[in-house]
Image (cartoon, rainbow, N blue to C red; front, side):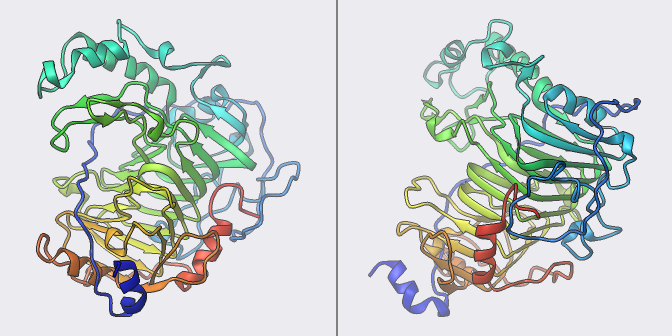
Length: 481
């Protein structure tokens, strides 16, 4: 009898488990964000003040003259996750009228961001902004290539059959680094403290960008689609995973040492350039994307709500390394009412942090061939998971939902598991902790249920079935009233 059939009969007893998969750590290295500077605010396109109270609704934005003014000064509601602690998160809500901008292209966006300054500011993104542009002209990978870099030259230089297992070095690797630096200068955007970035209308898109919140405090990002942070110049790492792998540089949003951050009703994906369409080089998929959202380097007090993570490999990394002991006591993150659809792994993967994971919806499509896991329990993590709904096709079992690397504990309750569907209401109650321990007792240490803390900062926690329906209709950009 298939395990799925057994679950249907015995899920309430929770006697299933999880096979092992490999995963890799994210390097803490990265290009430094632009340093802060101060300057007079540009006078172009100053938008009026808004002021409606914050609330959730599945209704799309209306077509008013300024359809986002009513949320642009919103602050995070009290008790809405970790970002509500210690004074809360207000973003740029106190910005004067001279620092409220509507931007329609990369140049305007860069000027509004003001080099990552801490001046309170509200930035409204109208339409689609492509960061791979120069004076309105689209740039492709050939425009960034310099010093004789070429993909075919790079592949020939570091073919493992002739190069071996040493780290790439020499002219082509140096040319790759120089080319990557040119692209990074164009697409990495520094977001400073006391900033609100919000999509204007129901179809605001930031394409190709990597928002860098390095050392920033008090930031809000809402109602915005971020897509395709495409890396033109992946680096070959011969010793990664035993067989080697390709390493990419850009996350759609990367928090490094950032605090008090609220990310709400955003949609993040690889739309336009899915990695599955890339070729195989050196026996590995030639990856072009890193994470959708990474929270690393002692970032703290973060709430991610009502957002959609889709069509991607590594969705959310919380904590970038097993030896990053400076993360202890930090990385406190709440993830609630988010949808993870067609995500291969890291939804999220956690090290060190106290993470509250509740009322989220997971959908693995019927044609998924590379799914690895959803919840990653890693070194000193303390995940408190409540009332989440998981939808998988027949070849994905409950045993695949959780993966542990040196983890010790996972609290879970109220989990539902069933077949994929647009709207749910069914599914079988399952005990993810018992499942993991039963299937991995011979190869991994058992996880305990004691994660050492109990969440107190949260909105209403609905049943998994109720939340599943609400998230299917209400998560993602363009769905704030």
